[in-house]
Image 1 (cartoon, rainbow, N blue to C red):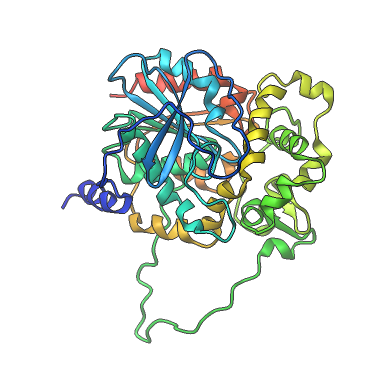
Image 2: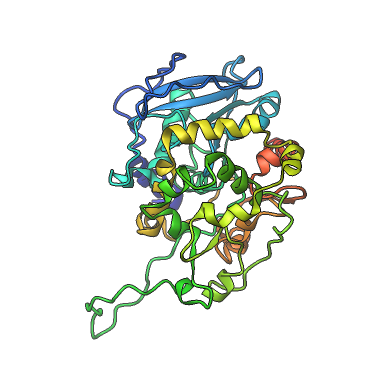
Length: 418
């Protein structure tokens, strides 16, 4: 059997692409908010972008924003946001992409915003938030919206990891991929040729202590922190308040913070890893709100921040105050406990073979996380890396900070697809 056919057939089973009931059922009416009794605030959107709710997608009712819906049978562009974001994060790029001739679909991912049907408790079934299931959600949303293929899937931050997985396992459905901020470093290899004449070592090994904790400045990685039981409450009920925390968090990861001057890390050692800023490598005894609080932007800086106005920020505050952060944090738990890696190992040795594009900001440290991933993506993991850009004036939130540049690069990439 040919390699790609094997991947496609395996992925059909792995992603549950054979859906038992029809998904093409759309609703304009807002569903009941399953997580709190708080009234949903009307979301102000640019004219030409509309909200919809898609029931029956992998157990969810999915909140969708779409543009370019007026003309039928347009090719689909599917947008996947990151943490702590929403479909709303794509508001500035949706209309330009639609003007280029596409049906543009952004949705609140499982665990976020107005998508319902997920458990927001720490003790719930967090395995339903792993990359495998979020990829299945992406497939279901596109099919529910009437598409038998997606022209390109675009992911940012965690959304880029989901988009990578989609392109890896369903190249027949996701025909190209654009990754923002987070590179795809390839599928982790399985152990090969490790069996010896004496047989495997069956003695259990004690878990190693996090080497970051042993540094002169005892530290922890943000992924480890986001996996803890306390992280949701730390952020939701922080001393400075949710508004100031989110304002500071968006600020320090943007190009507005002058100390963002990322560079490639030479290795994955604790000493090298600790060179990253405090929002990626925290003090061992600090929370994320405590880390970013000293860098709260001034009133002048906030007034000058046109890419995220107070009205924009209020959308995020309202949604996360209502739902909490735990849904988004559960994906990190699937990473630290090995679930995401174990799912990906099924495709060990395979590459993304659809046309690929990578865009990141010059002030975005995520470009170099994990060490070596960027080089692996360009050299091996994406065999058709046709477009690669590091743009000026952008940090981590590039589709909000520099929407015109991002849109222009994406449209150019799509125009050149064969």
